[in-house]
Length: 124
Image (cartoon, rainbow, N blue to C red):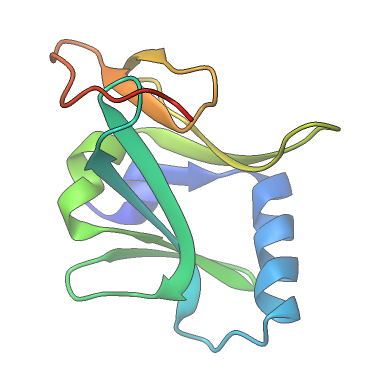
């Protein structure tokens, strides 16, 4: 399974990512890297950072940018969509995860459907 088949990015998120990469003078190997780690208030948390691909990462290329999916997170990000929300109190990239049974209020952690949560921590 390739990243392009498993993760999609909205036009709005792609535009914002292109602008962000340009403003940072990012090279052609740099993109928005997505990963999932244990933690957060719902069991699993999303991690996003501007970085180069690491060994084993899946790469989704689109006009003017790239989305990098951490090798150890591919299964948990299957079917997800990256979008960009712009609100007065909270703006940024968001992961829309159809496999999430629930998400915390801050939107950065989730519990998978059909799986128990990992280590639960309080949201800060």
